[in-house]
Image (cartoon, rainbow, N blue to C red):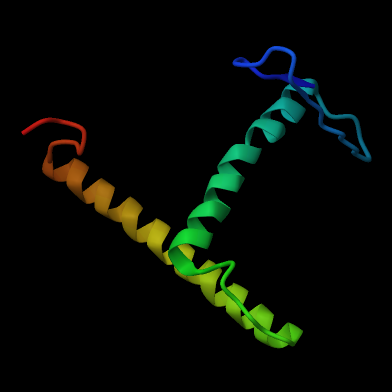
Length: 98
């Protein structure tokens, strides 16, 4: 169960099933990672057209989704490399006022 900070009366519930016992800390970690997964899919929808397909057959849908996810992975790796390169050069951060 999760309670909203802004609306204490609003509760969210998670149902978990495992074949072996799992510590509550691990369940909380997995539930918390949900937001990162949702942000990743939102990025893929916006930047690579993950949700812009109009196909009639599974094979065409599968190719479209695979290509979109490959493009999203490429963009994520490229952005990460650029951040590392900028950090090595000592470039000012994007939030600093120059």
